[in-house]
Image (cartoon, rainbow, N blue to C red; front, top):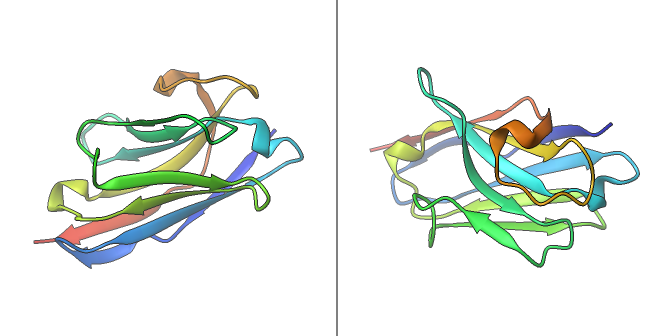
Amino acid sequence: QVQLVESGGGLVQAGGSLRLSCVASGRTASSYTMGWFRQTPGKEREIVAAIKWSGTHTYYADSVKGRFTISRDNAKNTVYLQMNSLKPEDTAVYYCAVPAAPYIWTTVLNNYRYWGQGTQVTVSS
């Protein structure tokens, strides 16, 4: 089992930046793909970015390409989401998650089993 704790959310003006962090507990946390998702009221949760356990492969939703960067530090069991050039439409609760088992590369929401509690990101216009 993997526990996840996000931090770094907050209120920022449009054009600003935030960096989210997600710390994973568990001996094998570094063996998991880690993903960032977001959700706004009335909308389905959507993937923002994902990074392979090795850090050698990443995925970005079209809406964030060129603005967001996902990275990980396996020595710290931590994944980051650097968000630049933020827009009001980026406002959401952001969640990190991992799939049901290690060494699975997936960007499909339903394949993610373990979730953090979420952190609110609000971008004002």
